[in-house]
Amino acid sequence: MSDYAITFDLIDSDNDGRISAVELVRLMEVLGQPITLEAAQAGVQRLDKDGDGLIDVEEFGSFLKP
View 1 (cartoon, rainbow, N blue to C red):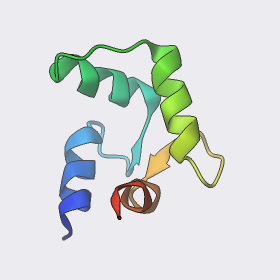
View 2: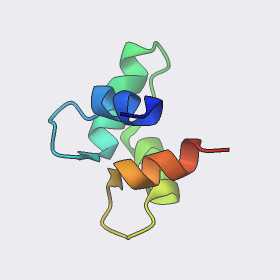
View 3: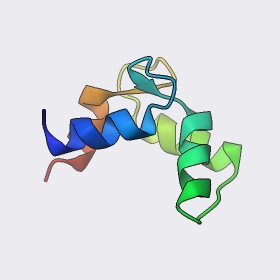
View 4: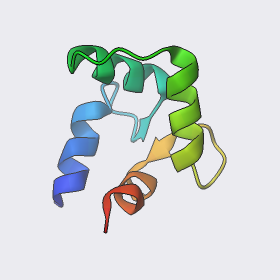
């Protein structure tokens, strides 16, 4: 399993194979950098290549790969 897949699994708190804006908000709260739901939705939209409103592991990996 790649490092980004391990990180993805940590963020995907409901284990559905996708990261939602709500999960992103929770992550940022835990990291001490709270963001609004609207900011999280904008972030998800930037990474969401298939237009389903969620980030899957491939989209996440594409974002993290150099």
